[in-house]
Image (cartoon, rainbow, N blue to C red):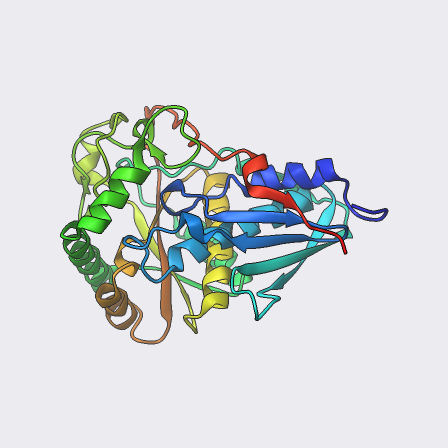
Amino acid sequence: MNRGQPDENTVRAALALACRAPSVHNSQPWRWEIGAHSLHLYADRTRALPSIDPLGADLTLSCGAALHHLRVGLAALGWKAVVHRLPNPGDPDHLAAIEFEAREPAQPHIALAAAIPRRRTDRRAYSSWQVPSGIMSQLVERARAEGVEAQEVMGKARTELLVAIAKASIVQESDPGYQAEIREWTGVYPGASAGVPAANIPTGTRQYGDLRLREFAPGELRQADSRLISEDAGSLVVLSTSSDDELSRLRAGEAAGAVLLEATSAGLASCPLSQPLEVVETREMVRDEVLGASACPQLVIRVGWGAFNADPLPATPRRPLIDVLTRQEQP
């Protein structure tokens, strides 16, 4: 970087936080390119999961979450990210070009950046305590600040969402390609740089109250209290956009990153649920029956209070920066 720009150590520190973002089955489908005056985010299609994510929506959402975390990391380090989304119509993998403006970091930026290493995807049962409406409103506002609609799904809409989740599970589990990808990306061996380790996958049932989660490879993570399995009071939030194009998905990923960090800061456990939106039929069900055909669903996020005696979740592995960062060739 040149004078008036962040030095390379600052950029690398922000990228380390960006790469802590959640991604579909921890596939980390992004790559970054650093130039003299800018940083560039690209989708890494070699890490696509075509059976799990046939639309490529989860991949773009994952990259959007990384873009959000980069913005947060830069802000905490004294730089505003000036983001140009989808800057190159001739290259659909070029998702964002980021320029920099010096900006004094504010305490909220530092607090959000501090939440990035603490955030975990918690697939265990949550407690029977409801999330207060005030905190739910904060999560909704975080999404809206990113230009994405969010709503807590309750009553009949929640029932319809649960039906969509169940139907998506039936469709996917009958697909050999889906089963192969689940085996490849979950229950990964210690030392792997991607995928969901067995240490982060709960043992036993995936049925928590009225919600059944996706089946992964066998796990090693014990439930803190078996009584919570039937008493789980986790809330479901749906993120949606007015369109269903690549830009909408990228912005939805940024909103997901914002909501998940807000939940972490509030002390909540959280878990993104993309399954009902990975099957065309059930994606349409969520659009029509849950959102009243008024918006395009992009992601479901489960939030709740973790059990008091729950073991801390280990961090999932991340690819080293050397694998995801290259230097832009200069003319």
